[in-house]
Every structure is written in structure tokens, then in C-alpha cells.
Length: 242
Image (cartoon, rainbow, N blue to C red; front, side, top):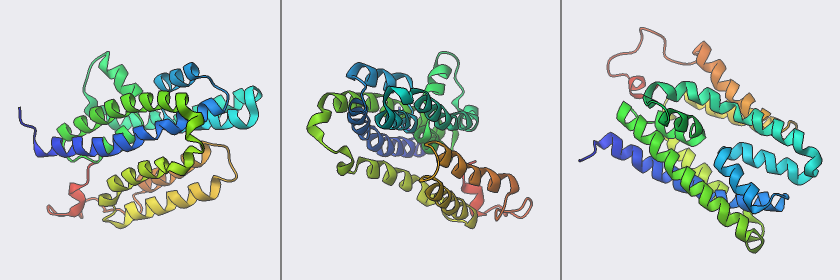
């Protein structure tokens, strides 16, 4: 059965983001083993936690403090993972599935699935973006985690490969079309500045949450956004998915 153009576009976005992010999993596998976890522990962490930022925060703290830093590592990972609960509020209306798929959707509610799905203008595109992105990243991330854990010693310094930049570039590709109005531009710049200023001074996770507050505050106050009743039928704002 032929897909509609919106669904096709969503799948293409899923592939672009999913493959770039999945490739970054090799870095996590290598860093996790270097931090003291074995291959089995590393793979289980990716299978069950499946939240890249939280995983990197966990192994990063373990790498500097060892087993004694376990409590701090878990706390930082959990703190950073709380953002996924906020994402769930955004994606829940268009998931529209029953258990056990709804439980799977909860596990796959991460930065990338939220970004791709909410960037689509139609319900069909949003659902396709969520599920395709989730499946691609989950399979790819876990395979690359295993590969990185097995050959980490051969890779050397994984940061030199620029895989993190590929993932960031994929996100920028999603964000760029939305920067057509003043409000999204202000949110993007403000969040970036907050994260950059706080990152050297605060534990992992807190700068990300603080940056997210920029979007929350701007959204609640509708600062610099279109006012109710002032949008015409052909306004560009009407095309931006909510």
C-alpha cells in the first residue's frame, strides 16, 4: 500500500536521525568498558536504560570515581532521565496504542523519537516518526554498544571519530526549519547559552534541565509568540505542529 507523502517524509527523517544516533552507540560501548563495566553489563545498560545522555552520565562518573561514586552516578543518570517524563506528555496524544505497545512506547520515548515525531505536521507522520525512529535507534544503538564494548581497545579515543557531531547535525536538520519565527530562535539561543554556562559548574543532567526551563518559561508566558486572535488563516504559525 502506497504511503502518503507526510509519512514518507517522517520515515526519511527517522532514518537520518536514527542512523546517526545509533552509530554513536559505539562510543558508549567503548567508554563503558573503559570505565570498568564488562561487556555484559554494558549491553544490559543499553537494553534497559536506553537513554544515551543518562548512560554517558553514569559511566562518566564511574570512570572518575570508580565504584565509590556509584550513588552519584545513579543519581545523575536518574536526574537527566527525568526529561523523558516530560517528553511523554507531548507524545502520548498521538501514540494511540494499547498495552504492551504502550509500554514499549514509554521505553522508546527519548530525545530523538520526540524530536522527529513532533516535527511532523500530520498525525500519521507523527506516529510513523515516533515508531520508525524508536525502532532504528533501539536496534542500532544496542548493536553498536556491543561492537564498541568488544573492540573498544582497538578504537582508541572514540571522541576523535566525531560521531557525536553526526548526531548533533541530525538534530540541527530537524530544528532548522522551525527557526522561522522570533520565539523559537530566542528559545534555541537562550537554552544553548544556559547549558554552556552551567555545564562546567554543575553535575551532569542539571544543565540540560535548566536549559529546558528556558523553553518552559517562554512557552508558558508566550513571550515573543503570536497572540490569540491575531493569526490569519494563512499565517506561517499555523503550519508549525504543536
